[in-house]
Image (cartoon, rainbow, N blue to C red; front, side):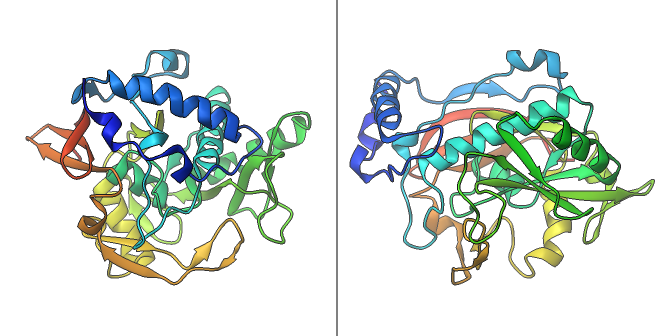
Length: 308
């Protein structure tokens, strides 16, 4: 027995708001299933980062354990999405991944989504969108797929030649706008021989070859050196806040497409008793990424290539 059931929150403490693919009933069923899983879960199981496998081999990827019944929220930086909305995001990211892979379109997670993978192996608890980069040359291909797939449950909103939004048609509107939320924000980048360009230039040495990184139970393509990539990006995007030391709540609500929050930065260690986080021990080649609960319990350990 692992004793992890003592860390479960009450089912009635979970936000049980429904989405088109998740209801209070299905959430209750999952909660009961997770109780049985946690009752017999073996702590500190070891996993290894998969190589950058082809799309046809995706079914062989290791599935990391994930439990909504362990979700807590912090008053300092509260959770911005519910368990059912999180399930929409996981389904949405998987759909975009499959769509890109099957059509030869290269993508990578970026911004807060990459930061969440680096810090939490998940979407940041205090974030309410997902971020992906795609080469500008693939814009027309996505627009074509959008036009040809009128009967699918997903849709691209073609905002401009610099960005798109990707969402499920059954989701509710984002604020007063015609697109839906939850959505994935897609930015398109141009490139030179040495750099990619979004709002700033970022060295390709930090990016390619892409690797697979975890978001909850998914493995998604990501820059190979997450730390250096994020530092390059956030020098302009997040100003003075360190990605290792400061956790930041942005003012902007993507759910409402409006400024709804008071921007706040806290020391990340203040959240470690509430939100799972990654503790690293590294040698010259690899890092052991320990998924920590309550700042003391190792749920699992993931062996990852060290950022070079």
